[in-house]
Image 1 (cartoon, rainbow, N blue to C red):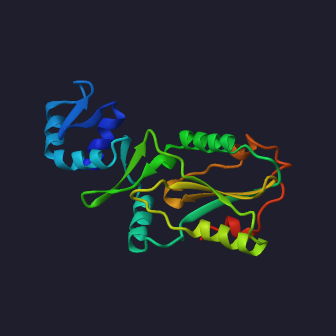
Image 2: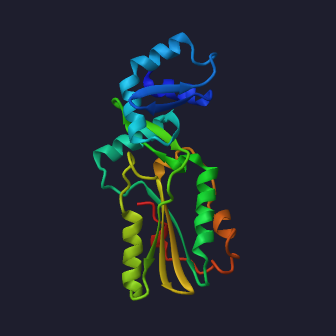
Image 3: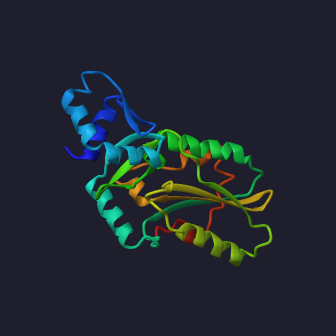
Length: 226
């Protein structure tokens, strides 16, 4: 069993690991933390401690699917590429409460733990770390002085901004405020977090506004996937 498989197996069985002054500490049932498992943890001790030092708030560690591995290695070859950026956007003509919108996106991440993941290398292989607590990447941008042409350009640039899969969230929100009653919401997710999924984002904005408010949508460019 390699390290990522080991960590995935014991984390799913309720084992917790933490770094206590350079010593690897464990908490879990004796049925899981057998002599053989403890020997494997000792074998990988240095790698695990490094992982915990870099990401102390790790909830679970998982191996990547074949599709995710393909995407990850393509990203390694071209980290500045935006080909796997998937965006959803709406233009909102209404007063908004950004606190509520941020709560909506937090709820989305709570429902889909992959959206709270990073994908670093462990040894020579990429792994998927699910974080219990990860700050929402939400940025409000003042677009009140921009022309429509400049606004369109900036939204496209935000959509195309590359992700760092090893260290950054795989989901981000960019909120362009044109006026008190004119906003563009751009939600961008890296395709690696959508691997094998079939889900609809529409119910989340609907929690905040009636669809009549959202009916005037952005041009097609904002929904491009590359």
